[in-house]
Every structure is written in C-alpha cells, then in structure tokens.
Length: 601
Image (tube, rainbow, N blue to C red; front, side, top):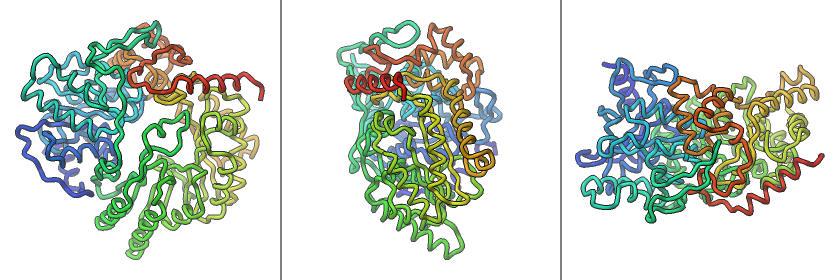
C-alpha cells in the first residue's frame, strides 16, 4: 500500500461525525467539488469555512454536487516552494481516488493575505494551470476562493475564477447549480462567468478592467459589460439560514472539537473587520447537544473558537454544561480541557471568570506558547496604552475596565497569566505611546498580585484593513516597527530589572518578514499576484522573504514597495468593486490621527 493511501485510510478510520451523518450520494451526473485545505488533518478540521461548506453540499439534496477534501498530507514531500506526492502518486482527496485536478470545481481558502502564495502551491500540487486565462472551461476545474485573506482579492484576480464574499452557504450552492445547468445546456450569448457574477456574494474578477497607476494602485475599475454589477457586496445570513456545521466542527479526529458561539462583534472598531458582519448568536440547544456528543465520543478537548465569546448571551449556561461534562470525566479519572479565544476586558465579569475557572483545565490561548507554571491564561487586547488613541480608533475598552478585569483575575486563584495584545506602528502614535506599553505591563503584573504571575506582551503591527475606516491609512515600514519590540522590552527591563523581567515577562512580535508580505498583499492591485508568482518560481521562501527581495521583485513589474506604505488618498482603491466604506468617516479618522501624531504629547 502506498504512503498516501495508508495515510488517507488512517484519516478515514479515526474521523468521527459530530453532526448527523449525511447519506452517501451516487456521484454519477453530479459535479465534483474538492476543497483544497493547505493544512494537516487535525488543523484542517478547525476550518469552519471549508469544513462547513463541505458538510452542507453533501447533505443538501437539491445541490447537484458531491464535496471532497484534499489536505497537505504528512507524507507529501516539501522542497522549497514545491510540494509533491511520494513516488509521483496522484494527488487525491480523502473521499475519492480520482485526481484532484479532474474535479469540476476546486475551492481554496486563504486565511491571511500574507499566505496568498499558497494558492500557487495548491494548484501546482493538483496539476491545474495557475492562471485563469490558461485554464480551459470543461477541461480544467473552476477555481473558487474565499476567506478573510482575500479582503483585498485583487492580487489573486488572475488566478481565481470566482471569489465568495462573506458567508457562502447560499452563494456557493447557487454557483454549483448554475455550473451544472450550464454544463447541461450552455445556452447562447451569456457566458458562465456572467451567470456567476449575477449571484449575490460572488465576485468574478475577469469581468472587470483595471487602469493602473505607476508604482502601484489603480485609477479606475470598470465592468466589461453593462450586465456586470459595478459593486459586489458580501453575503451574510440570518441564523435560521445557517446550518449546524457553521457553528460546530462537523468532524473530529477524536482528540479535539470546537464550537463557534458567536459570529461577528457588537463593536465596530475602525481598525478591525470583525465588526463588519452582523452580530449573531448560535442556538444554545444546538451547542449543548454538541457538547453531549463530544462526551459520548470521549473527546476531551473543547475549543471555543470565538474572539467575542464574552458577548454570547448564553455563555453562562454553556460553560455550566461544559463544566458538568468535565466533572463527570474527572470522576472517571480523565481531564476535559477548554480553550477559549481572547476576550474584551470590558466584558469580563466575576460570573464569567467563576464559570471559566470551574472548568479547572482551561486556557485563553491556542498558540505555540509553553508556560510551565501556567494555571490559566486570560488574553486581553487593550490595543494601545494611551487612552486617547484607544478612543480615536473607535474602541470602547477604557483603561479602568482593563483594571477591573485584572482585579477579577487577582481575586481568582486560577488565573496567573495575562497576555496583552498591543498594536504598534499606527498613524497617530508617538514614541511615548509605545514606551507606555512597558509601564502598562508593569502595572498589570502589580495589579495581578500573584507571586508566580506572568504578563506576556504580544505586539502586532498596525494593518489598515480593507473594508474598515482605516483602510486608506499609512503603514509603517515593518523593519522599523520590528525595532519597537526591543525598545519596549528595554524599557520594561529598566522598570523592573533583568531578574524580575526574566521571571514574569515576555515581549513577543510576529517578525518583519511576514509583515513585509502583508504590506503589498493586503492593499495591492492585480500586478502583485505576478510579483508573488515570480518570487515563487524563483524559489524565494515567501515565509521568510526580505524587504530587499520584495523591492527587487516589485521593480521588475514596475511597482514600488514604498508606494504600498502610503496613505491611499486616490479616489479609487484596488478593491473598488468591493468597497462600501463611508468616505467621510475615513477622512475624519485620518485627519484626527495625523494631527495627533504631529503634536507633542
């Protein structure tokens, strides 16, 4: 038996259906859609976008398609940017021995804009031409992209045929119906792409023409035909129209499973697109039934994958239900661990903390951090140490609310570690604002009051996000921002001394390489895709790419790195077709921030 076959057999043997299993369909006459997920099996199960859609397609009888999954299996061979199967074996899905490249539709998911190049790797692995123009309809699959990494989809416009915006439960199913009908009766005069462009929530890049500006950016984006919509909006659905796999992991490998109690956020901070979708609650009965199924399967790790979990109206009831499961497992000598996302300090209450700590084994991180003395971790995002910056960016979390949250942690015997998320390199920021982060961390440790307490300062570079009021703002050079980490750490060491720092503090960041790529991918036009493809073909490791490598690659395509750092004051943005942000709000934010930056604090 081949390595690939053995690994897939192992995956199928250990997979557990956690929602009601669907009836197998006869694939004859149906479209075949393969979701390519660029992760190993365990991590792939956490992707509620592709996993939920995979589940929905297979259980919806009036959708003329079957859905499959193809992963980055452990046996695949990695050689620089290339990934191949062992012994030249056909790259296949979990569900079918047929080549992935012979599917009718392939779905690719991009979680962050710094990973756009993963699309090249996946298409190469499947043996599918990368560029839309090189693919032949009916011979090659239709390539559909989605997820938050495509907030600016333009760099991938030459590679993805269709991009699903927002929640794809309706738009993707309608796409499959239209593709199937078109294959049966193509009709005359209207192309498949034009039909797909009429589906709400779908963006078809090839139906638009861009007029480029020197160095980067666009002067105009124009539909090629009058029947093509000038603007495309994301689709968001009411709870009653979302199926269970949107809120719970439909499958598990037996070691972990997760839930999504909330969608969106009640708040609309100017730097965050979490508040763009409407805020919604998952049905509590569905979640408690799911926890019961985890208990029946003896799955002992529960991931509450929601950065706004404290906004869930039924959180107390849900945590009590998990706690009861944990107590029953403890009576059998086993431990249930619950992982919860970060919280807003202004939403932390004594009742919430008591409910969480009653879980006994819990954490507020699902990261690589290893804290030997950690009993429990609370993650709080003040974002800035200066109160007026917090307010100017539209965040309602005032300092006194953070202090109150730390006081609650001090009173708890089960929380000894606090992670603080801060943004650096933002417009409006001054040197003193960054150094104040060290003072903030020192005070949090003092307020925490635990002898073995730990404060982790996690620094993130400010990223103007498409679809938010901050989308046009200037970016700082990541190489410069990276030096801020050392400055803040040095300030903190001066405040507390080296010995105390080593015992109680950590200062972390994401590194400059990742951010250099984000600079051009998160706000670039279609030419950026060509730059990424050039670097990919030259075997430049894009996970560690340097600024010099990017500058050189951009120059070969007539583009400027520094131009992508600019304040984008031109009327038309590269993602113009998807842009619905209020221009007045953008201008007011920018004016206030730049005025603050130029004054002495």
